[in-house]
Amino acid sequence: METVVSGIRPTGNLHLGNYFGAMKNFLKMQNENNCFFFIADYHSLTTHPTPADLHGSVKQVLAEYLACGLDPEKATIYLQSDVPEVIELYLLLNMNAYVGELERTTSFKDKVRKNPENVNAGLLTYPVLMAADIIIHNAAKVPVGKDQEQNLEMARKFARRFNNMYNVEYFTEPQPFNFGESLIKIPGLDGTGKMGKSEGNGIFLIDEEKDIRKKVMRAVTDSGPTEMNSKMPEPIENLFTLLNVVSEKSTIDFFKEKYATCEIRYGDLKKQLAEDINLFVAPIREKINDIKSNDDYLRKVAHMGAEKARESASKTIKDVRKIIGFKSF
Ligand code: TRP
Image 1 (spheres, helix red, strand yellow):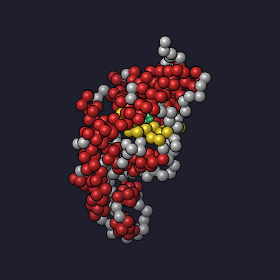
Image 2: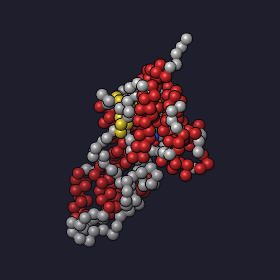
Image 3: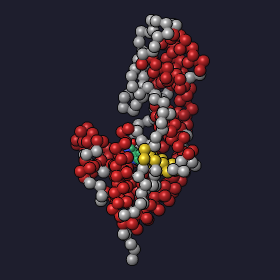
Image 4: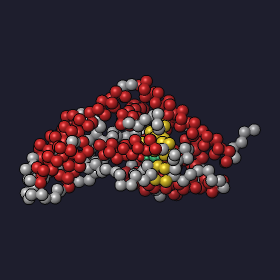
C-alpha cells in the first residue's frame, strides 16, 4: 500500500467541480492507500486571517470533506497545526533551501506581483513547508493539480538534497498521483471553461435551493438550434454535462431528443437541471450542517487524526535528528 499525502487549503467552499474531481479521487484513494489528508492551516497564515476567520474556515472545510465521505477510520485526517513535528522538519529543510531558488518559483512570483505589500518569509518558504508536509510521512504519491506541480518538484528536490547531503537513502521522492482519464470536468455556468472557485461560476455544496435555481436560470445559453440533429455549442453542451451527472437517464434522453428536434425550451431544461442539482446536493448540504453543529464529533475526528499523524511524523523526526547528528548526552 502506498502512502499518499494531500493538503487542503482552508479557503472557499467545495463546488460540484471539486466534488466530481478531487473529491471522487480522495474517496477512491482512501480505500486503496495509506492516506494522510490534512488541512493546511499553517499555510493559510501567509494571508493573515483573523483568529475567527481561521477557525471558521478550518471547521468549514473539515465538515465539508467529512460530509462528502472522507472517512477518519480509513484515512488519517488531521490539522497541520496539530502536528508540530512538521514544523521541526520545516526548520531543518530550510537550512538547505536556497533563497534564490525559492524566489524563482512561479507561485511566489505571482503572489509578489499580486500582493507587493505582503511579501513575507512564510510565503517565500511555502514550498519548504509543503515539502515537510509530504516527506514527514515519507509519501510516495501526492495528488496535485497543475498549479502545484512545481511545489511537488521542489519537495522532490529537498528530499533528494537531504539524502545526498547525509549520504543516506532516507526520504522517498514524492511523485504526482496520476488519475489517468478518469476525471470528469465539470463546466461552469458562464458558457465556457470549467467550474472554479475564483471564476464566480460555481454551484457549491452548501448552496440553498433558491441559490441553485438562481444560478442555473442565469446560465448562458443561445437562441436555440435551428437545424435538426445539430451539434451543440459549448454553453449548451455544458448544461447537458451537468444534467449527465445529476439527472436520471430518462430526463437526459428527453432533453437530448428535444434538442435534436429543435423543440427544446431552455427554460424547462434549466428548471429541471436546478431541481436535480438540488436533489443531489441537499443531503450533502444537510450533512455539512449536521457535522458543523457537532463539535464533539469534530473534536474526536481531529484528535484521532492528530494522534495517527504524530505517530508517523515523530518516527521520521527521530530518524532525521539522528541522521543530522543531534545526540543527547
Ligand atoms: N499548496 C497546496 C494548495 O495550495 C496545499 C498543500 C499544502 C499541499 N501542503 C501540501 C498539497 C502537501 C499537497 C501536499 O493546494
